[in-house]
Image (cartoon, rainbow, N blue to C red):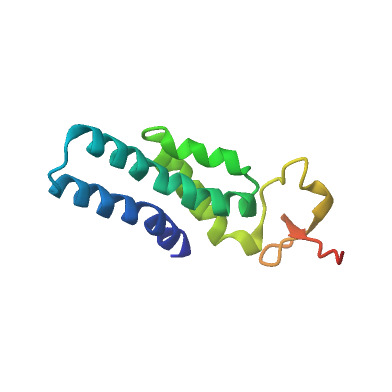
Length: 119
């Protein structure tokens, strides 16, 4: 359910803005520039959450690729929903902050947890 909410939070504002722009009677240059700004809404929203799920911020640019953007957003939303049960491999630069432990629901599987470090 959380994955669906995250997915909706990324794409519903884009759809609303697109419909609003379609209803406005603007000259073509203004419509193009507002349309490009509308394409950046999912990128900006995803840029905030991608580091939480082992992606780099620049990976949010994948939201600009047609059809792939739907799969990518769904994957980010799915990982956010299952963040407490982190079972994907962390990036190389994240490995120092993660520890491999037994999965709480299935002891035969392993999961990664964040090691809290006080600075």
